[in-house]
Length: 196
Image (cartoon, rainbow, N blue to C red; front, side, top):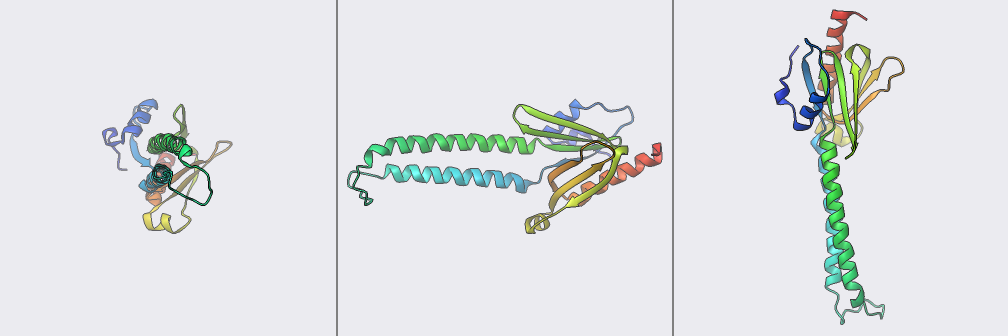
């Protein structure tokens, strides 16, 4: 079975790798990062909203005393508050977009010969690290719904667990069938070594 050098991990996976305990003979097999398409969506939405806000601010800046929008009111008094509000909202959206992108990139799954480790960061001050013994894996399935997951080759990997443990869902998994194959192979190798 092919093992991976921890130096090859992404920076966020390296941090996660440092937080888990490994047995003496445990080897790192695979890192699952999020697909670039999800990151593109975050940046696209953030950029679009920022562009709309800046367009509104530029439109407000172009209003003069001679501008007549059919209201009969003097709109020049609203010009500066609209520009200020749009600018502040654009800055806020840019910050939120940067945070969302950082959190998206910091979510990883690490597969070792002994366990599956899922690191999720729902917010800046909230991290969840779940570890599942590779022997407790019951089933691994892949879900690809829609045209983009098929064209761009990403999907959701669902790891079903034994007993009361919660299933692991990892969305925007690149090459999800390869990831599921590594997990299933590691599970089968574990069964050969330790049995059920």
